[in-house]
Each structure stands twice: as C-alpha cells, then as structure tokens.
Image 1 (tube, rainbow, N blue to C red):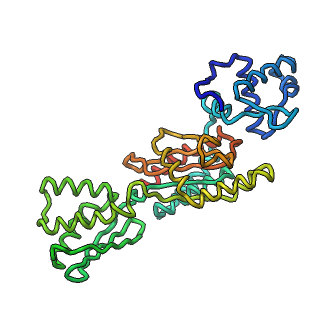
Image 2: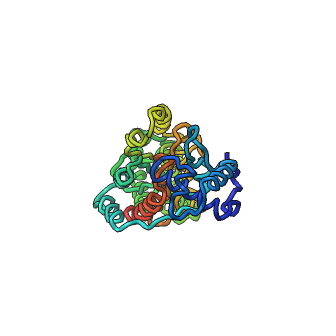
Image 3: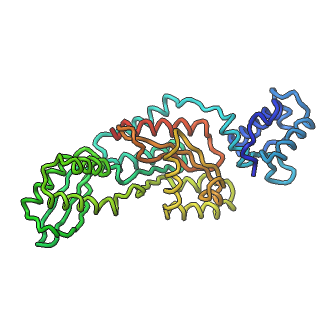
Length: 353
C-alpha cells in the first residue's frame, strides 16, 4: 500500500507527466501502457529507456504496477488516489447532462421516496453504473397524528407522513384519559408538528412543555410525550435509513474479465444486506461535497475492486438528510462523474424544498 503521506511534491516534473499519462490511459481504455508507446507520443521527448527508468521509480513508490509479465503499467489504488486528489481535472457538467438531470428529476407531485428513487435511477442511467441514494427515515415531514381510545387501558397512536405512509403504535393509558382529552392532545400535536420532521417537532414540543407554554394538563402532556417516544425509540431512530439502489446489473456489464464475476458477487451480497453500504454512506454524510471511496480503502469494495462517488444532500433547511451517488469500477470517468453527482445533490435540495 502506498504511503498516505506521499504527495505530488515527491515527484519531479518528468515523473508527474509520465505518471499522469499512465493513469489517464488506464481510465480511458483500461489497458496498460508501456514505455515505448509513451515515448512515441508527441509531448514526450524522451527515449523508451529513460521512460522505463521513471516507471521503475514510480513502481517502487507503489503508484503503478504491471498486471502481467512484460506488459505495460497501470495505477495501483494508491496511485489512483493520488491522481484523483492532486491531478484530476474535473470538467464542468455539460448543458446536455444538466438538462437531462433536470428533466428527469423535476417531476411534479412526487413523494420523497419517489424523488430519491428517480435520482438513483437517473444517475444509473446517465453513468451506466449503479445508482445509490440513502435518506434518514426521520427526514419525512409529519402530516397528521391522532390518538384513538381503544379501551380504558390502551390508546392507539396513528402517525401519517407527507407521503401518506401510516404507522400505528399502541400505548398504555395509565392516566385514564377520556376521548375528549385525547382529541385535545391530537389537536395540539397537529398544530405543532405539521410541516416539521419528527425530530424537529419533538424538540419544539419539549421546549414548549418545559417552558409551560402549552395548554395541556399534566396527564395529557404525559400521554403526548409517551406517544412520541414510541417512534423515537423504534422506526424513526436517527440512524435508521432508507436505501435505494438502481442499476445493479450494470456492475456485471462493467466487468472486464470472467474472473471478476466472483468478486462482483460479493458486492451483490453486501448490497442485498444493505448494512455495510448504509454504514459507508453514513460516513459520507459528514463530508463537505463529493467523497470518493476506491477499492480496498473500504472493506465493502475490497473484493469487488469497485469505487463509489457520493455526495451528501440537504433539505431546504440546509440539514443533511442523506447521500447519493454511483458505484462502478475503479476505472471510471471521475472527471465527469464527480460534477454529475455534485449537481444532482444540489438539485435534490430544490426538489425536496
């Protein structure tokens, strides 16, 4: 593994130019490139022997290697990381790509999950890779909450989010509240929760209760906090996420050798399990802008030799609520993919707003 402290200043001008050409050739064609081929290029006024010496130095730094005996060289994962961090020229998103993303993403009357599924499908289609999108479950806005008296000891709590999804919980009616008291609690919550996520609403209500600004009696307030606790302790935990994956079959279409198929199967299993990919996307939530995971830098891709380019996206309140991006081979067009992922993340803020 290349020394992580290695940077571009450790290479002289000649080494940088040759290293850059080797990586660009690999990203463009997937093929190794040899010293003789490089020497015949217009921008190189060097003999094949001189280029071989430079390539030997780059290989000793573990930036490039030979995949086969007597073949040319391709970058190692460490070399690819150095190139992306220090040498990659990121292009601007073309007008055609921007128009395609906007046209597919800006549909009307879509729920949050529909919009996210569309974003994942769109990224997969435009890149021919696998699109991934995650979102915190508590990012959904509350539309309605209701308390229904089942009997003297049980109350049904009904929560409806903005997408029309309904969840029910049964709680104890230890205070012996009547149907009219439950109606007061429901009206109070609907007034304070509408237009907010569950976590936002809970914080507002907690402040209101602590400052005694509410119009509820003690028994009703107790029921109210107990009812909300049924969600914060279960399905709507902050770490609970929805994962949407589109275009998984592209992982197979992008493999370049039959022996790679077994490695891709491991990634299929991890995507099916979802746990590992959700944890990885959770790490990306803390990043500012696009983040890139290359091959064995993360155990999720150590066997498949894949890379992931992702970016966090926000709601209209500038709160990070999820991550979106693509999974593909390490040999992908990062210069095009990075601005595409970043633009889609910015666009999601407008859509969710």
